[in-house]
Length: 261
Image (cartoon, rainbow, N blue to C red; front, side, top):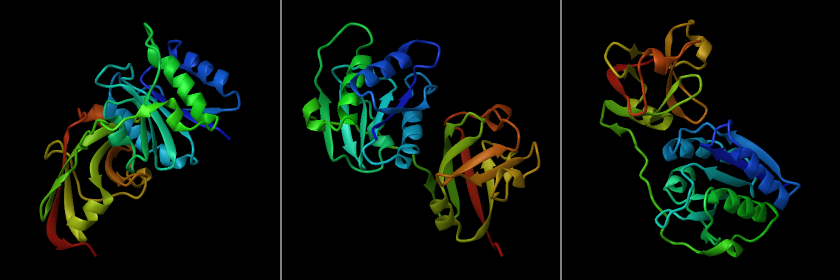
């Protein structure tokens, strides 16, 4: 079964998503098209990469993932097809692939197409996506491309007793997700007691919840989410809005000398 996913910054009010689905189904009528998100902030490559990175691994091998974010081609950022981790990815070479894909690419192809005025990526994604969904070879889409753009992910800094992280994503519930992983937390913490400071010393947490409901309604909480990253939320509330948090806001973990029993 052919599966094509769509992650875009095109929204739902315009014709763009519908037009792309029509192009894809014209080329591959049997395809199942899955909307991952069409509400990525305009041109926000990092946000798109986070969503795709934590979605694509749940799809079967051979799935085609179209990333329509900041996707109009330029001479510096051409449209490319990437084969990696058993799947296919289409998008502009903005650096999004280096952040979104968990494995090194097996192949990268610069897509061949005739330039047109207007919404050119629509037609290119439709044609290339249908070709791959029909089982066509990626090599048939263009020429090998070796200069794929690399973006360096923002990683948490750490010392013996401190982790300095930042907020890298805010979800639709206004929960904030940091770049502090569970593995790093355990490696630095070594089962010690800790204090988590969210943006300021006024917002302090000293426990990690297993579920959101471990906290009382309206209470601030910390949890390691399903992708293994430290998340700060308010039970039945909007943490980002109420605490004036944004992408890049600081989250600091300080480990104490006493061991947790």
